[in-house]
Picture 1 (tube, rainbow, N blue to C red):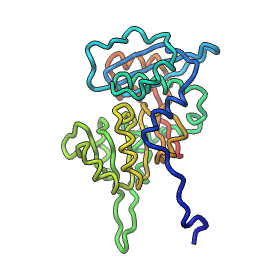
Picture 2 (cartoon, rainbow, N blue to C red):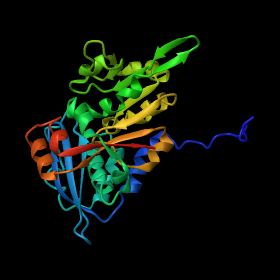
Picture 3 (cartoon, rainbow, N blue to C red):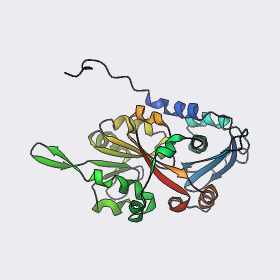
Length: 281
């Protein structure tokens, strides 16, 4: 009998506390140096006034934009701390700005980014750059699970329809849950039924800004969970919320990233502007 049998497991933190955690970890003396809100990406650069150090961060842009944003033209020069309360806003544009600003701060002197493994060149060479995380995990997703005298393929669920994702169907089976489903995609409401039976769940970190991430994590407790995408804050505390692997980005060239975002670019940022890195928790 295990030594800890009969003992209760440490309580997990409340999932809704994710936004308070990000705000707490991103508190700093940094100021907003630059804000770009493109069709696909919201990009922010911050500066530490004491050292002059710069940090860069992203968030997936809301798909529906207001024509009149009252604070446009006022963000540059503001303290980052003034924007962190927007993490809990129900206004998607405000939340996107706050997440990008928090990510910019968290990119500065963060040992996790250095500890994370860049996607190897041979892996990136055989698939689209925005799909390299799935290619990285593909060998494990092809494994089978023993079911008595039979074997069963892994149940893999991907939250969000990534551009080009169907190219990977020849390598492993997967289901897609998408707010705007196409073809055989499951609608968002199917998450309550599909995720509890999944072996692997890949959750787009853009679910942070639309406030669905806490619920998705609560449904994925039986699975190996990968939280992925440029929107993902590099925080060790994700482990306490049920995340097993982080697949985030390091900004390699902010000016290029900004230019791509301003010109309406989406997956092109993965070619040279940012680099995917993977870290097990």
